[in-house]
Length: 337
Image 1 (spheres, one colour):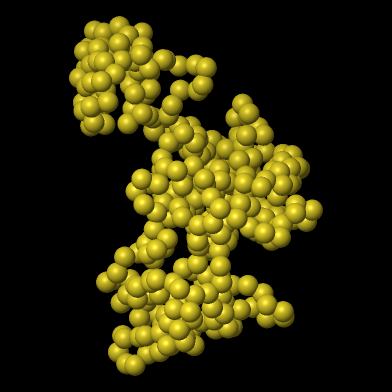
Image 2 (image 1 turned 60 degrees about the horizontal axis):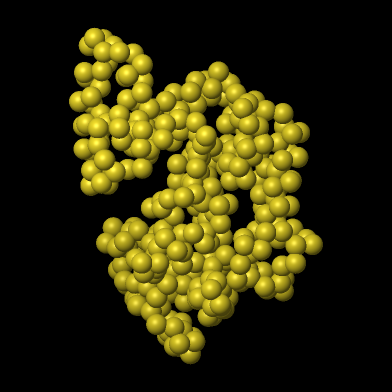
């Protein structure tokens, strides 16, 4: 369940909704109109205690919803009194955790993660990590995506909007740039991950093209009715506003470039497709088989690399080319751990 703010006639209402599975897609259904203020459905008998008006339970029972009191606490958490929120936060799970009837079974995690749109993955990656240089998000499972699994398009937008509200104003421009993967339009450009140093008119053109492409993507709007692509959906209108109302953080381009340079070399990255070392060749460099590698933990791989590196390092009398080959093999294997 989740609470969505929607405009009904001339005023905004809060609607209690839930995500359900229908026809191989996640869809939302309305459970109860909470009116203009969800707080009126919460009663405080004294101290730090609280309970929900009986009409909430009646509405959910009439819809056949199975839920626990903790589910309602999580949904109404933002509308609790501040001092009560502090108490609840200290004695319960973090808000936003996937739980209740919509929790995704373990065997379906990979299946449902494959259903997530790449736009959602890029947005959540920036919101979690704050990095424009996102890298390759497809082809493997990512734990940070679990918060979006088992949710319809409307609920995903609700979750992401809540996280977007915590961004600083100077981060909004970079967030839109990364979410729409605009760096892909500047291949090979030394400043592709530093939008403040790129041609702003070119960035505007690329953003408009990407937004129009997403607006026509049926996969992004899976489970939703009423969108024909002839007008820009409200989910996407806000990104135009964010882009044109917020520029990029104007720090020293040299500092930005050096930070990007250091970050690229601090973390192990997969070799570009069509280049680098083959997996079997990497096994041969380390003197292991495929089966031995599968049974090996990440820690064991690191230890083996350090042991080989001590003997092959040029400062220890080793061959420079052998040491580089060992490092390339290590990067190929590490990314698979």
